[in-house]
Length: 120
Image (cartoon, helix red, strand yellow):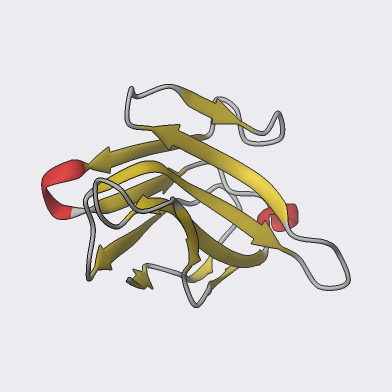
């Protein structure tokens, strides 16, 4: 399974960006899609996840500002980010928990990371 993320860039405080990440390869079902981020000098942290029942978890720091969604037909997860703050600056990684075949165990996959910089 390969993940391809896009949508990062430079944005001013208060601005918006939309990240997307598409999976390709042997996929029977994607149980969880999500986004994590890693700021310079910090550990990778959860931003948001969505499972195949559309249950969503957000980190408290992004609640009300970020929206995660998924398109199962396209094996794609999105992260709509609004009211961005300088502290949102980080490399954002998409995450997929994939069952490749009906009998195979689930495996974790990570995207290559896309940089989001919030600065004036």
